[in-house]
Image (cartoon, rainbow, N blue to C red; front, side, top):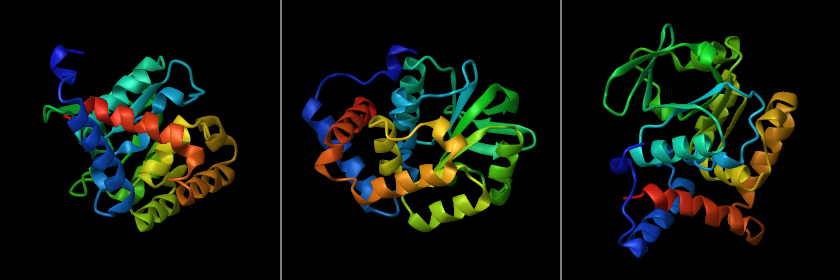
Length: 218
């Protein structure tokens, strides 16, 4: 990673305020689909497929970099794209607006914000079946409850509010092995967290998540 990818350490209060605002927006404002906080704290994930790569689909540069860095810090190779352009072949769009052809065999897990799938060339109903056929776990995230329901109905392994997914990862309340073994139970845990996202019980996890957001919120 180049130095240009790293945020400067000045104006700390402004960054913290921005992070807090983004966190609140992701949970309270339904139009904040693009925040992509679901995978921010992936350092806490217990990925059960050593050597397999993680695909992150996130359009916001500060969020994509945070997701990439946290996963790499946990020892996982990560490919970050800002959009899924086509499924067959699997083509993503990079931060530099270049098309990147990807081999599905590289990946074991995919974090997908549905707002970053090209509706011009991809039938969203085919996204989950495509990844499932390739034995790739899919975690969909949205700030909109209705969209999360649609993702589950279309075959995503898990889907939920962005901040709840993030908190479940930071707080180690959920891991990918559980999603594979018992998806209904995993979804129940996530749904329960959504109802108590602002509780004292989750204060530490929220603090960690905000710190990760602040790192790139410049």
